[in-house]
Image 1 (cartoon, rainbow, N blue to C red):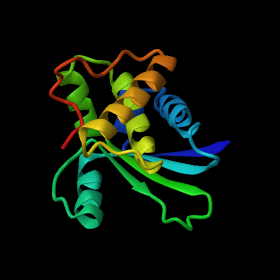
Image 2 (image 1 turned 180 degrees about the vertical axis):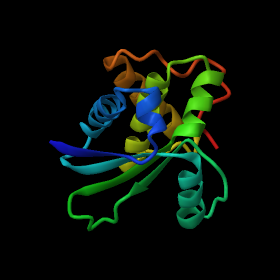
Image 3 (image 1 turned 90 degrees about the vertical axis):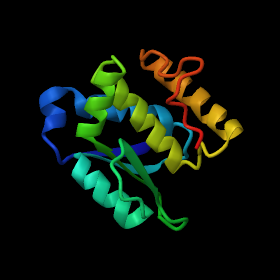
Image 4 (image 1 turned 135 degrees about the vertical axis):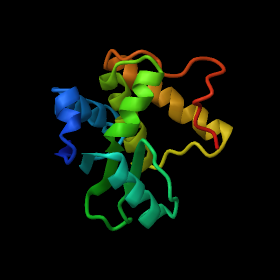
Length: 156
């Protein structure tokens, strides 16, 4: 079984979404079933913190909704860390007319899949990753976040 630790650094998550810990844990466990145990840390923080992480570790000086940091191969059972920015996620959920909880669960699954080696840098891997996301979200009762022709598709 995978151990999921939730760290709430920005209280706006709890204030806007009282069940945030349960929702994040459910989503992480849905994706982590593809792993053979280990641990994951989910950091629920703000845009400033995520932008700083993005600049320091990925050399991208920009805000983003979610970042995933896989552990080194000798991570001794720790799969990695996922960080989500409340400000960015809340703004996206509002713009996409979807509940914040659904968007959170989608992005947690997305981040955990990155920890497990999935990526979306080309059409075929993006299709495979999105199919997994759809299936896992459906199990959680969350509607498909991707519609045909959706400009939010992952391919870079």
